[in-house]
Length: 64
Ligand SMILES: [Zn+2]
Image 1 (spheres, rainbow, N blue to C red):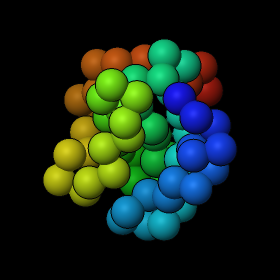
Image 2: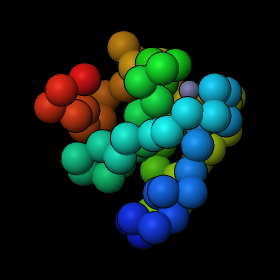
Image 3: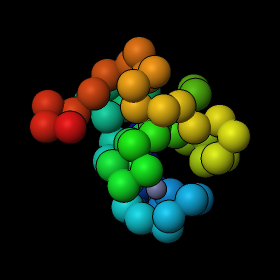
Image 4: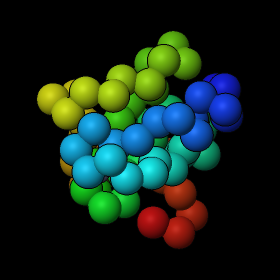
């Protein structure tokens, strides 16, 4: 994924920064404890599409 694009992305709920997951399959908001999925390299930045961290089955950062 485009890292410059990532720098422009913010959580739609809290406007905080996001962490790109190791497999680039999602963007984690640590403040909200949700993951915004990345589908075909397109981040889905919709609150209704956010996956609660405990239900996320994709990759996770080493220090969550
Ligand atoms: Zn957030």
